Image (tube, rainbow, N blue to C red; front, side):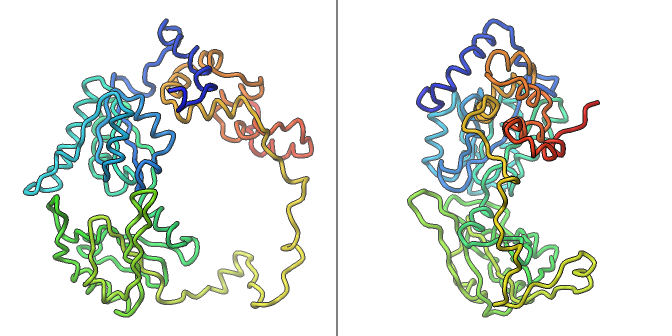
Length: 392
């Protein structure tokens, strides 16, 4: 434990744990009127490496972890780092519809929470992206008065942006689920980045441990060719599942996708085919001047670095920053702060009076500025005022 959290973390948490034992700090779950909770997290795409510090904390502290992950290494890590666990993947079956499996997964999450357990559910990728059971379980439990939350994680789309070097602010971006795209005849803008999810199971409601047969891939390509030329270059993408493995990036003509070996983790990226046109009237309305011609001289202002008067560095150490780091990876400490902030700070934190005032305000601007040692930069008082609410 000490090697994972560090000696500073142990010294912070020891008085807190003692307070829990003697009952001086109340750890009742906030914003819920029933014992038991559900926290849904994601393991990301790349084995273990994509599990955030926040997610690690919830896995370690949960009474039980139920999981559906995509690789054995992550499963073994969960087994090593949880008190009790259950593999949701066992609920799948070759002759079973996926919707029935999803409902069974919901039942497992709800059952453990109703039994009074602090339950953590782990799904590969992002737990809210193409994960029906997570949304359904959260809704059921919230309606019944239980605490149920979802934490963000790394999805295949995040990996795709990084591996292909894409920025959605350039051209704009649109994404579709393959079957939904066909059933509802979604219209694609061919001057934007386009991402099509789940191209490996188009129109397939079942499940096979051996993989999908791509029976309807041709139908998808036929539809896409009504918006793009068959020769338009696309990317058949599969994110890296292990740190030592490269992602699969297959650049092919759209028409050749029919012959590609598409799997259940395949995603299709379609770059813009056409060039969008800027509206000069809107540019004028927004006060945006046209960019200088290529090779033209840059404006003097563009060559000037930010002045020292505008920059306020963060300190090397801060009690408030350390407390935020501790809370980020220790769910029980977060829970104690949410329930009894002042008592938790007295036991677990060493910070200045302004830092304590800021963290108790729960105002992001005040918290940010309290860590910046504003007293050393009086000329930046206007920034402080912009980040802080006016006193009542």
